Amino acid sequence: MVNRISRRGVLGVGAAGATALGLAACGGGDAEVAEAPPEESEELSGSVVMWTYPLADSATEEWYQPYIDSFREKFPNVEVQVVQQGWASREEQLTTSISGGNAPDVVYFNPDFVPRFASEELLVNLDDLREDWDTFVPSALEAMTYEGSLYSAPILMQASPTFVNQRIMDEIGMEAPTTWEEMRTVGEAAKAAGYYLTEYSGIATLNHNYYMYLWQAGGEVLNEDMTAAAFNSPEGLEALEFIKEMVDNGWMPTEPISVEQTFEQTALAQGQTAYTLGMNVNTVRDVLEDDITVVPPMSHREQVAIGSVGALSIFNTTESPEAAAAWVHHLTEPDFVEDVCSTFTYYSPRTDVTGLHADDPAVAEFEQYLDVVNAGIIHAQAREIIDTMKPTIQEVLLQGLDPQQALDTMESAVNDLLSRGA
Image (cartoon, rainbow, N blue to C red; front, side, top):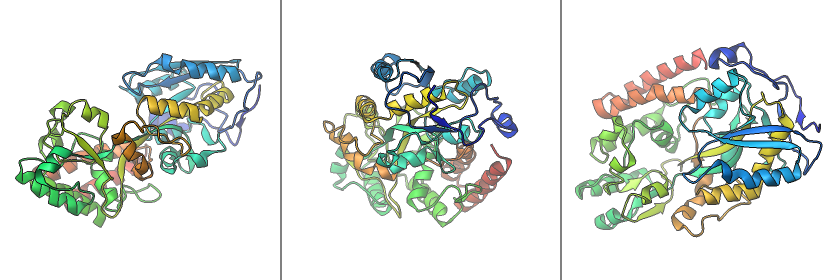
């Protein structure tokens, strides 16, 4: 067998990892760093099972078959099976499969999954898998990097375009806002005309609301070494006070701050919202009858856009590490990236695969902003941090809690969470 995994150290689940996720590594587990595979090989053998998830309503397991076929032309003695799982309870399903010794070899991950599994030493390092990582969008690689190492290979980028309801903007006779000050001006005009400026979902991830304003203000969620909260800062206060200002002035509806709504129920879908910080335009166009106009991402001190990355990781429990590395390498080649991104309306994480949506100006317009996408903090407790902060922010927006008091409370709670570890 061709050895394509360099052994830089023993990679297994220690006591801390087993305690945190209840996992025990089964099989494999002694390979840390994947290396680039040969262009083709009859020596390479093994079996690879990849778990993926519906990338769109039309995405099926069968869609991957041409790439399985082209892979097997290069590596005829490697068997590949693609299994499409449901989005619900992803983490629980994965941890159960690992502890039960039935984990997939390769799995589709979003950024928040990488630190949770990499911190448990369950993922293979992909730094050396490709020699052309420099042709990938830096923000895509950064989103899948944990403690300086790449653990998931990007195949697509999600960027949620910023846009306005053009009918409302025409009615109030204003240009689309691109700064906080312009948002204030549009907010007053929209309210006077019977509309909202924008919306704030208190149920959604903070990556799509408070964090966005925090980053635009120049602040950070955690300190540089990720050991303590950093949002209790002048920037964090300015961001929270700005959101509260929009709520207090009636520029935002209050219901979605505490109530989960289907998209059809939202003010945006009902043509009542002038500006949107970022959302999938296809979702909007399927429901909203008004025209939308895509505009640059919002800026204050920094320009930041909502987005995420889809990528492929290799569990170190795999019994076919070289074959798994070859498969992931195959799916990060330009032809697959172009196909998956153009077919399912994503952006390419490769700088040599661009212009995929020229026939859809609204989608194509936002491609230039991929490098200001912030997919969230890369920390094993990222979701717990969000869950800790959300209720207190809701108190500020709905119950009048003082923003500085809220930041103090959240800082203490987050630091306590961090001190306990994952």
